[in-house]
Each structure stands twice: as C-alpha cells, then as structure tokens.
Length: 121
Image: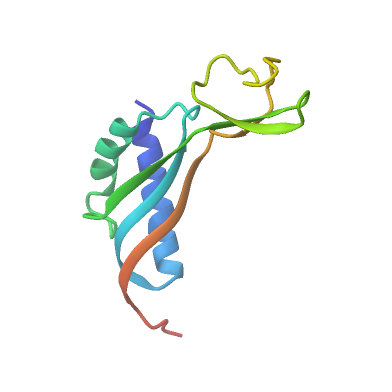
C-alpha cells in the first residue's frame, strides 16, 4: 500500500507549509490525484488519518480532487479529456498518443487553516 507513504509525505509537506505561513492549525488539505497516478482515493483517505496522528495536521480533513486524463493529439493538434484512461487514443481521429497533459499528478495544492501566528524574530 504505497498510499501510506504518500500520506506521510503529504503530512510532512503540510506541516512545513503551515509553519512557513505561520498557521497554528490546519483544517483542510486539498489534493489533486490524477486517474493515472496509481493512487486509490479511499486508501489515501484512510492512510492520511494514520499519517497525521500526533502531528499538527491531526484532525484535518483531506479533500481529494480527482483529475481526469487529458491528452494532446499531435494529429488533430487538440487536447482531449478521455472518459477512460485506456486506450490512449484520440476520440476524434482514433490515433494513438502518449502525450499526457494531465492525469498523472499527485499534488497538495491548498491548505485551509486558522490561528495565524505572528513570526517571532
């Protein structure tokens, strides 16, 4: 279950980001997970609670935003969102493509929190 190691990394990044932005408390973490990332959303959510225990992130909610697969077709010169990740073919011209624009990412892109602390010099 690699979701547990991903959850630990998310917690580590969130703690560092909260400290850098002087947030005493983090309420929500927003994460983008691409359909080709290999991450099982439910397993990540379960693992997050375990990884956050005993950290300043404990009790925060993990909100996972699933990112669909977006490809670029060199034949049509267009981007397309695919309903299914396999096969990687253009829905217009049916040409195979390996040019994935979105859908493989795992990204912590936003934190919500409160109780901003004044930096001490």
